[in-house]
Length: 107
Image 1: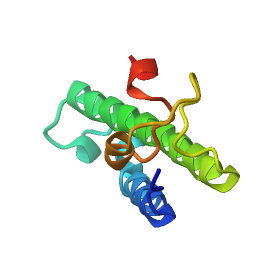
Image 2: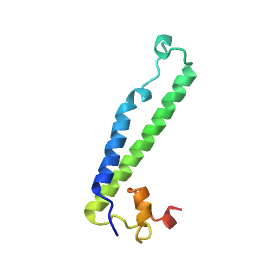
Image 3: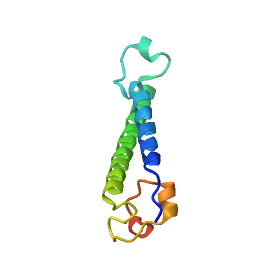
């Protein structure tokens, strides 16, 4: 099985970390001050904050998956399904280089 380059996983990790840094202000506590919120209602501001926090949780989960994939690369276990031990299809790894399960076990 051809391993995807470590560079691809590291690039994905760097991209997610940069997005996290850029969205930090969106996840901050919503201010009650009408000057800070502008014309948006408090509900709109809270909804925007909640969406930014949900996106951050997904980014953090993806970072954990990428770190696990990097560890599997180091140990030589990369590309093997964690459930059944079979090889994960190369096309699946091309689409998601952090995939830990084959298609059958993921379903």
